[in-house]
Image (tube, rainbow, N blue to C red; front, side, top):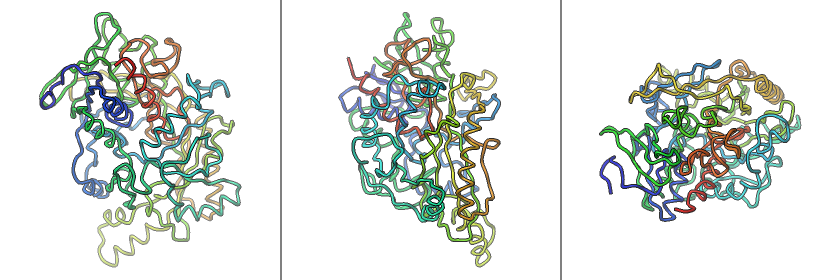
Amino acid sequence: MAEGRAPSPPADVCVVGSGPAGALVACRLAEAGHDVVILEAGPRFDGNRESRMETHLRPDMDNPWEMGGPRDAYASSGEKHYPLNAARVKGVGGSSLHWHGMVMRLHERDFELRSRHGVGADWPFSYEDLRPRYREAERELGVAGALDNPYAPPREEPFPLPAFPPSYSDSLFAPACETLGIDMHSVPNARNSEPYGGRSACVGYGTCKPVCPSGAKYTAETHVTRAVEAGARVIDRAPAQRLEHDPSGERVERAVYATPEGVYEQEARRFVVAAGGVETPRLLLLSDSETYPDGLANSSGLVGRYFMDHLFAGMGGRLDADTRQHHVGFNTSESHQFYDDTDPVNGLKLEFLNYAGPTVAGAALSSDAWGDELRDEVREVYGTQIGMGALVEQLPRAENRVTLDPSTRDDHGNPVPDVQWSLDAETKAALRRANELQERVLSELGVDIEWRVGPDNTGPAFHHMGTTRMGTDPAESVVDPSLRTHDLSNLWLVGSSVFPTGGAMNPTLTIAALALRAAAALAEGL
């Protein structure tokens, strides 16, 4: 076995990235007896999660996940600035270290958008084809949910864990929604409503994003740990610099990675890149050669193109009543009633927030007052806030893309990613539709609306999708339905970068289902 961060002997599989996609693939292959090495750009975040919660709560402290600086530099030269570092993590576990933990299956229409509505693209397989992998993914992540959503796609069995009960503020929304004919239902969550998978039940810290101190919320550390227990090796603080192929250009031979101790090369029979929707295409573009002058696996010219995210629409304010926000740090109710509407065609889902306004701790820690004055100030800003959110689908457009910016370099001298992003008229129309629905509910509830997020001031949900799209035609896609690249026979790309369309559902469950599908294909012939 290699020492420190030096390479292992040639492995069966080298996985780049240890978020949910990479961790699940590594775990499945290691537990099947294969020799697996994981390269992770960031560190292991061992230690006390309560201290990271404190870092998050105190306004004068740093990012709890140590993002920023030359390592994480980026550009955004598109029509709309994309704040890339606002919600990603480099470290063992990837961005699952700070995610919200909501996990829904895509709807059937999401796989057939072009056929049904003449926009976007079709996936190379149907919902029914992925349905068994969704079931596996829910078991692997430990999903709590209920069979109360009449708009969800068909499923074969109950969720592994019982759903979290509706929050107190959900009970405030319910009469208004009933009057308006808007259905509310539970939200599937990858957090434990009871002990599961060696993790405790949720104890209600309320700081789910960016840190769950109790460990009740799933992170990819679960599957990294299982992979290591099965014999896999993790090399942390080892960002991949490029992939190098054989003389024929048909196979990847090695991953070049940098560490604090030096630059090394890891050889393997098969390679998996699971570095997210921005860093995956960036690594391919950095891996150009005489055979692939436009970047590795890029004979289609589509590496980096069709970047998509989900857009946020929201609205909220004050209610002349106790709303008990932040007693629960995640959503417990949603509405998918308008998801399959065709005007506009973009999918959208409504969210009933449990975290509007500041927390008690946040309000107190940001104040200079003391004693009775502090108590009165906290009461003034906390406790009567209420809000709604929504995720809106962004249709794939070739001009939305990830490229390289040679004018800015990272800490290893590589061009940084440049996210070129803009919003189309259809997405803006869907954002307006979400705001209209939110205003109806909040007005019925009697809320004094104080803030709005819509077409003019929307922001991303930080779900990076579409930049190495999947398909059957090598001229129109980067990977095939098993997620193997069309150009290289031993290179797989796993994660949301392969999504042909993004829907409006949080992507992690689909990422996990696709990772399990890819792991089965990878295992063949090893």
